[in-house]
Image (cartoon, rainbow, N blue to C red):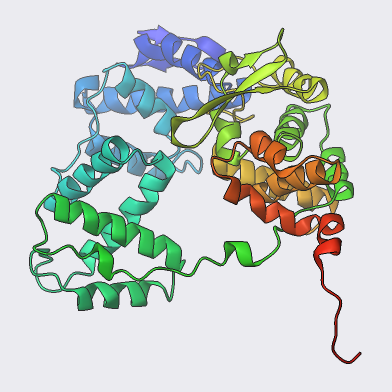
Length: 397
């Protein structure tokens, strides 16, 4: 069989699947040149399979590696790694044209961590991002166990030794929370003979001992001006920066925003916050215009429902790490020191305080569950703090 889309001839067992693969690439936002390159990879793979007398059902992971070796041997320098053929292989597997990737049977550690993951998500209601962190710490802890890695005879001394060692290279609060949660799970499941979660020392909470670090209005203005709104990248970045700095959204809340969350007529949007919480909040007209510009002239029509996606193919949803990278890139364009996305949330709260909003109103905008969380911003309200300051009675310096 022979097919000729985009001037690429395809012969062999994969020829019937060219049109479907081409449509999938177009749906993911691949531009014509990149789409043609992927079709050429398909054509080469199909020719190689024909020469090997191989049907699609026999194209397993080992055969794909053999094809890549043959491609490199023929002098190809592009698309010669598993990542290079990933779009094609992913499509063929999604259509059940080729067998799924062979997965080794799960080990006892994998089964235990999977049970821990289900416990965190379903019984504790931990957010997926925090669950991933706890699983990483739990894996480190299991691999550090002495002997055969058994938990039954685990002692508090061994727990303290692990925590002390890991705190030298990781954030102490990150390690302590992960280990404590894992040990609590192990005791509930009967894997440890004694409750050892209490053996993990508490980490001093110094978050409220310092002023919240913010950025001023002039810096925010420079960040917004650094976005070239004539391009899709600039329109997306401008909308995201407005949501962070004007509305005080977290990076995870930006990436979780879906098309159906915005009520354009009412001027409102739904914020998907921590722990599955959803809040209906107002959407200022200028911020709404920035989001609408991205949706109309930049986002395209990928299959996902997320408001913010990658600009380049494949058009997958933007991630929290992508938001942080976006903010860092804006700082570099503006010639400013790099700040993280959460710093812009502090900027929104500080600007509200300067405009005369009280702490309760700021807590509503930031969607804090506890008033104590918002109280940190009282430290930056210097005008209200001055009358509380007692005069210095000691000698003048």
